[in-house]
Length: 98
Length: 206
Image 1 (cartoon, rainbow over the protein chains, first blue to last red):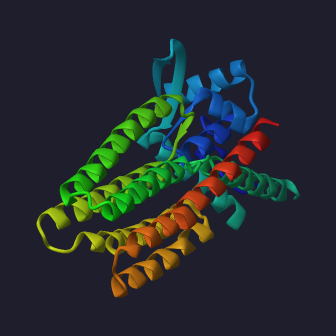
Image 2 (cartoon, rainbow over the protein chains, first blue to last red; image 1 turned 180 degrees about the horizontal axis):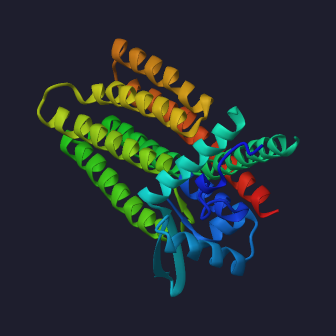
């Protein structure tokens, strides 16, 4: 009675917060940590953990710099991440179509 | 029996959340209108100064110098401001990059039309204004599409209509008509966009 094979779903993206991060980053070229936090209403700690997981899987890239002596972290989606996110959406759509 | 339905509902919910986040992120303000105000005021001031120079029989070379110095220094100052501002921007969008490219390209076109065209003697200096109006009309049309602001695109009609008017009835008054066009179709829209972006930022902060 299963409507899809759960092995086909990308575990890295399949989490509410990580899906939201990917949705933010696919819509922009580059975003600061604070921008992502504002858009998805996450706490600093929680967001950092999930960003790290996406970074470890090469779904997002990180750029750290200092602006007016303050550290600024910017994130961008990678080609691997874009492909994974598109596949994830396709999978969701195929579930709906069934 | 109900398991697939739950999964379908979940998938639908997931997609609608993703769509909402994507739309929301794309809405990140790409233009707060300050460029329109900045350039609008500088060009208007230069137009008035040029008009006075013509009335006081100042040499054509001096008039050319006025434009060259004011436009070049305005571009350098804008570049410095933009570089500083870019460091504080929280998000970079493709739309923002398109807008920058569009207006940089249009600026170069206007610079060529304004200086190379007249220095070479290809046309009379008074013809600069209708030619620049044509470029501005195209730039506004595309800007509005990129920012999804229909009224901004619609301004192209006024720029092109003004261009036809200035081509049909050229003269000293062209400078004043062009100054009025700059105030109405550049500075005023810039102020509207500036107020709107301030309001949006306030709402986001609330």
